[in-house]
Length: 296
Image (cartoon, rainbow, N blue to C red; front, side, top):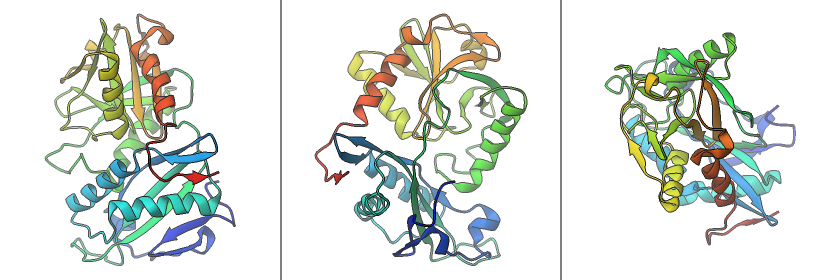
């Protein structure tokens, strides 16, 4: 359950109980998937709560809205302040935050001049768990970037993700790895992808993937470690039998992969660069950055 009778949410410029929140059944977003959203995490550290890279997430939300021709009346600073207030009202320390910008009543395929903002939060562990993942290459492709703006975090895009992960679980796997229209590795159903080979990290370039904020953070950590990261297209066959691999995203954090299509990796997860980055990531997300924090 994501909320209780006491859960407070933000909806259209006011605070209300989640159980009292109401939206139109004729929302264009509900019928056609024309909304944009973000997934953000807050972490508790020594009695204080820090929202990790809130500004980056909200800037991406506004960028996604612009790509979808959606109006947003809030600034990054206002959205960040609302998020801290939301956590305080709900007494949350470690939490997952979901802002959603959605359209109003419109049953035709046309641009609207207004939009609605909803922000909620709940306690949520790692989306993919803490065990090494058994991953399959999906039969579903990542959407073509010439058809939709794949760099935007759009609600409708995630039907593709649901199909891929449902297929994977039905076949006994934990997660799916999707390819692009050219047969190169793109990303997982809800996370970016890296693999390690001979001390170098490899990851697909921007263009067919979501520009993940956790992905960028992984690359920052790698640079500080002196680890080379190469962005290039590669087929799934090139990944198999390498040193190791992992997925990363706000919900999943850093998730190690044990098998890809039944093929193991050369190194133990604990001996990989990905494991070291995961350890550093957990420390980084709890480091104060000089911003106003909430007292727990």
